[in-house]
Image (spheres, protein in one colour):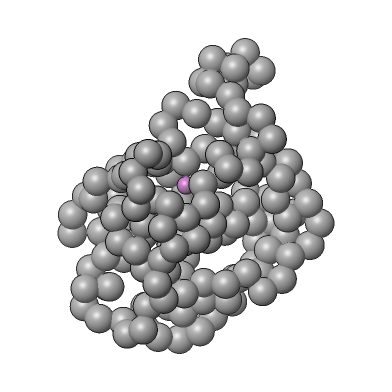
Amino acid sequence: MAILNILKEGDETLRKKCRPVEEITPRILQLLDDMHETLEVAQGVGLAAPQVGVLRRIVIVEIGDKKYEMINPEIIATKGKQEEIEACLSVPEKYGLVKRPAWVKVRATDRNGNIFEAEGEGLMARCFCHELDHLDGTLYIDKAIEMYDPDDIEDAE
Ligand code: NI
């Protein structure tokens, strides 16, 4: 396992469209393991492969005891809307208000090559949308209605 370097906004890799995974190779499995370790150290809730410099359609999401590894994920259904504050490990020291669906269902492939579906609301729904956006080179700052500095967030609390 290894802790990977997380690319920061301004790196053009974050703006590229990722290619689908065609075969789950030992290298892909290693990448998933390394992404988990990296996310744990970074204390985030989600990480997409392009954030660690790999232009493949892979994301991981870890919220509480729910942990997902998603290969070639796609949003297949959404309901409602929500507006909440997001942050991104690739955009340090910033926050932004983003409009997302209230509920999202994703279809993806797991590390064993099986297709599965996962659904979530609230933070989980936002995280699915945010991470999947990374696979198309989109950052939440592109969609944010308002951006904040850490001071603004502290003042609000
Ligand atoms: Ni992000």
